[in-house]
Image 1: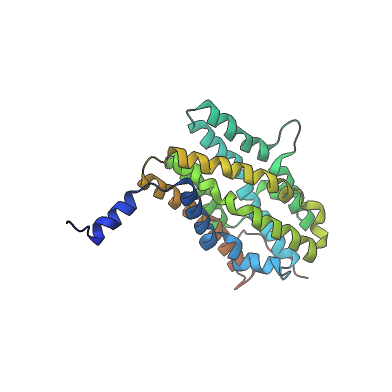
Image 2: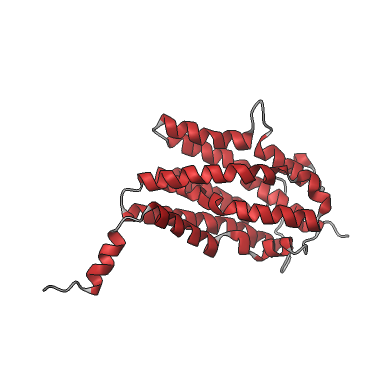
Length: 256
């Protein structure tokens, strides 16, 4: 009787399509390992150890990321050949840009930045945003432009983990920075938007990844998105926490 080699078994395992539950578990494992909930900057935030100036730097730089989300989603929308897909994905653009009935996530983030003490016009203009923030965020646009539609959709799946982080963040911001209370509408809206969006994206990836190799590309796209989020916080930490070296032209924390 022939005996299968270890290499043959490994090849077969690699070629086997993951079930929906297994694929989702792989996405969840990626988030547990790489999502920015573990970044030292966020840990300081949740411990109440950031100054108002550091929170201002975070709100300002994060705005650049928020501002490109509807652009990113419009790029994905334009690549969708199926009207059912386009109708579902269009919701994401409206969630951030707003419409006649909703102010949208970008405007809500401006309210948060204003609550930190920033000038809204300065935030919209992007004055003082770190160069590394721009590089990292622009790379996210490169992913959705240059890779397959499957990978572009999969890169959005940080929404699988964001609800847990947002719940913690809102609790800790209210506890440690009560003066931010009037600017937390953005997070409260994402608590119900993100789960719906992530479920659609998981189903799309599962239904359209026809090979194990394509599933692995989707997982890698999510890893890359996590790296982009982490890199943004690396830049903030270096510039405004330790060693505290903002580059020329970047936002400067006022001395207190």
